[in-house]
Length: 186
Image 1: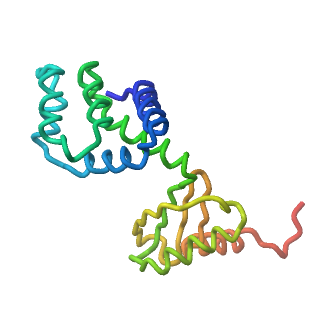
Image 2: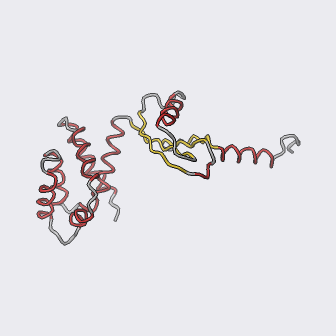
């Protein structure tokens, strides 16, 4: 069940508190650590409506104490005591969104016809920065392969799409052949 308002409130509270206590980077690392542990049994246990919040608090503390900061443990204790664990994934994603916004980090999704090297990704990032639209932005690149674009790349940054694919060029040429540019349009 989606709980976007709950996720926004809790993630904003964690973000603000970590910023006030100068622990933002540590809390970000903690969240990455927690998300990296992909144990189905632990996830099932922490999400179970049958197990009470106090038991979840003790399990979480046993697993993560010493690996994450006391602030992070306190935050998760609050989540479990308030029965907000169903919104946990949304809260963590929203926190990362606040973190990226604070540091002017944008996600750039690059789609290519075949896997490309990091040098090509850097070249694309630098080329888009030269447009002047993304001067103070740091890009977090996520690559995707889609053979249907035939070649070139498609870069998406938020709502902005830069389509330099061969498929796009072929579609443009096709439109030009359909509309005869040499016939006068009435």
